[in-house]
Image (tube, rainbow, N blue to C red; front, side, top):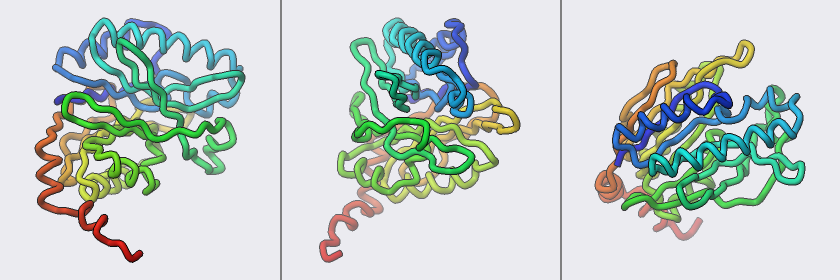
Length: 258
């Protein structure tokens, strides 16, 4: 199965660009499209000073267009969005297909002085998203949440084969992300596909370099720092082989006394 990562900057109201990108992903025989964080809405630091009505209207417009594209190209789209409900702001990941939209609400927000998502967004209890496509079971979470072990435990309990991680990383953090997620993929016998945004906010650079990792902890491919589409091939058989060979999850379950 092919997974397409669309590595891009902030996408404007103009419908043509996103349509062209998804059309290209479909031509590569992709079964799923993954978008990074903060490309369908403005970046977090910009949202902080925007009227809530602007955020609501932007999301409404983008969601309508994504539903249309998913139907036209017959492909599910995984898209981070800012959802506004009764003046409350939620950061969500939407799974969009021809029939319906399913939402996952972010549970763990950045609490840092320069990036206080925890003070800006409202909380809504939500289990991490899982879904099946063909013979592959997927899990979805936000980039920051991939640091939290409970999410990986949840995906292990749900027998997830591939974890999709939209992110918006900056400050030359690529190597740290790569090393962490290589380890997570290997220890949890899973594919990890991470989509990272490009572009700038003031002097902050979003460096892209989206990547895919297989269940052996090996890099499938790493993109550059420009707009591009990455195609990552994943296989259920490789997940099964990694579980059989390394047995980490099986051994973890065998420990009962602590």
